[in-house]
Image (cartoon, rainbow, N blue to C red; front, side):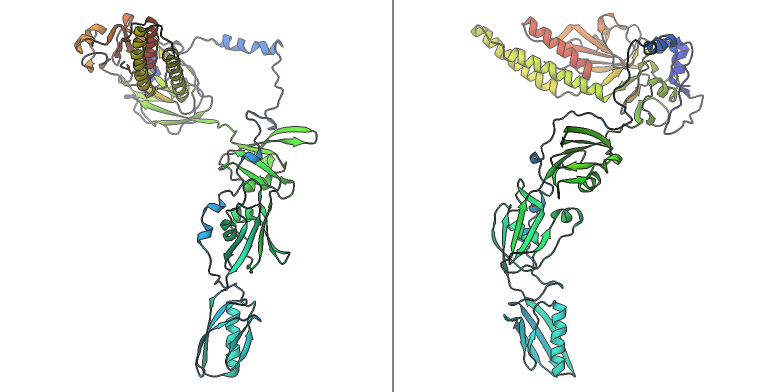
Length: 582
């Protein structure tokens, strides 16, 4: 049997029909041990079908024109809540490129594609019919001199080509029984000028095969405000020998590798047109354009989007005025983005499924996948609970939005208390001394109260009725087990749990816990129900599972301050089930 059928035995008339749910699993509990939860009219809010029908009658009578002015299906409108982002205020894409220490990793120039130039040194070894072992420098004409063979031009050759040339030259003189080995011993260092929009223009040393990034890093990197990451030129004798787009390296790892010569110049051009990209991206950046525009597909390839991005907001200026357009991501690919535009990616598609958790006394799984408009009654109808062991009249919900509201309300109250009493002037010395004491009291109280975490408990069961509210994603539905105990806490001498005994009053339980402390306010005693409801103990019938909470008295003779403190103490007790000691 389930929870709501248990309620039906006591005070319910009939069971409502329930919409089918997408549940994550089914139940196999025995009918003798479990019962199904189904809400009946007596525990739902009183609203007849006729009343519900009347709510929509006004629209049919034409009294109110509620036709929307924007078609939600078009996807070309959307919220524009933030002011436009200036591209100049964002770091450029690639700003972290020169933080990896290129300058500390100079290359040796010894790679298979390196081209020999004057000043390099080549080790030549031969044995057998011809014995030779010497390091030969490459002279100004690009030659090395081999005894018996004469000068050999190796300038512009790779190390493999040099090996073949030397081998051919020696074997042409000693064709039999000769082995030859060559090795590029060292390269001539070069000095390269780095100028344009870099942090520290100047002349920097390296090897011919060092990366362009090595020389840029020695110059402090590209000026983030003015320098271009897409137009970096290598100039030799007033002629551009290579143009490097660092976006290719940032995105694909590919970069041009010109072999530098002494006196080459690296020129970083001025930054070109740019756009601002933000929203649901991993890093908000300024992206530089080649030309004055690019397509949406190209931008998506540049930006690193977070998962779930569904829409794009495009804002900018055009010849006929400012624009602000909101596109689904699949329609954005064909859009044109121009210099100065702002592009905001967003995950703006709501899931049609929510996940709700169940805790307490029940059978089955602890999490349920439900339709987004599912109500509490639908969930309870699908939950089986142990018969005679579940307090179905004390169901409650822990909700994150309620927790945030409670926390914000408590913070506002504490801030008002601090502002009101800590900033008030004193007319006499005695009053000043009293205010100093009260100020310390208030500060200590605020510090302790600020550390408490609200429960976020939403009371849905009251006076034998359960509100059939709409569930929210992340809700935790608590179905408590029947309890045989009472908890006595707060300003009592011996806080304790006691066995529930019918007929005992609140004072009886307090006396059983040693009575009130000196700080207790015996006029303000609360009873906290299992469902989270808080009631005054004066006119309440105790039930098993209740908690008796004795509030502390405000230790001040200032009536207004005492009233304010008492109000906040109540607020704390309701939100956290804790009586803060002043």
